[in-house]
Image (cartoon, rainbow, N blue to C red):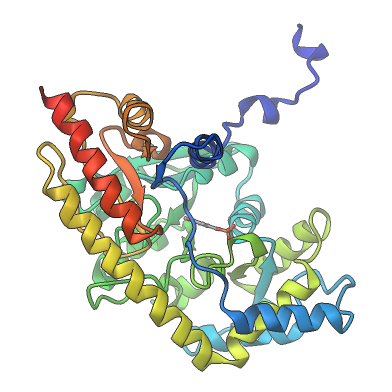
Length: 396
Ligand SMILES: *Cc1c(COP(=O)(O)O)cnc(C)c1O
């Protein structure tokens, strides 16, 4: 078929489907066929959404909140989000807040609002699968900086400096990170943000895992570092990972009025507002902050116990070494000693032992696999036995 007669656009032909969703789909299909699969592939919490959030949503639905809302979100929610950020050291008004259908959409709209064709976007690897594809959809050029487990999967200011060219427009940061769970300290982030700002870059800080942090560590928001930072950083987050609301599609963005307005304009011509009654569910988080904290604390307790169980178990397997990640709900063990590509490792692990994991190559990092511990303790225990069994066979 000639180029002109293809039904597909260049955008559609160039996009890679999400490999994490693909692994999840394959594991679910095996499960549906009656196989006892240990799934470590999913990038979502395994808890139900807290009841008070669901009740607020149901109430809004029953009371007739079923019409279009303002594109950037209902005023009460935008105001609550602005107040939340101001409590964390920001200085923003509700006009700087945009609520979008998922943090993923908040990221995409940020990129569409700031990246022109030919602009370069620096993405530290291992990266979240969607960043490079989103940059390409905007006509931008992704440029990667590689980080390994030896540096805790964190890039250095020197690496950033070396990657910046006159075409660089945007730097993407994601701490705590998907897929590695790595968390930058405030000092580390300040040094990186400093380089970016001196070079005149914009920064998208994807803080979707901001509340999932362990080992007594604390996260921080680059937008609060300085006045320049508040003008150059677009802060993206959402409700999916914190309150187990992945299906709700509730993302947030805070930026300068200029960028927030551009994002809202893009949204007004594409998805329009987030589902009206879902916004009232999210609003309940701020109206019942004690209940929200209690729900979060409970989830964190479970995640942390599972994290340590998986971490200890992996490091006890000959041939595997695992960095002790301090955020999100992922571990990113190093499997280089087996001499297999991460794709082959994961394909065989699923085939031989019915354990689903995502190859590091999906995240731009060969030699690692991503395991999500947002899964039952029993699955982690059983999965560890199977992984150990698999690895011991590989070593023979
Ligand atoms: C899950 C995730 C998001 C957004 O998720 P939504 O379900 O779209 O809210 C954004 N960034 C990263 C790194 C994620 O892992």
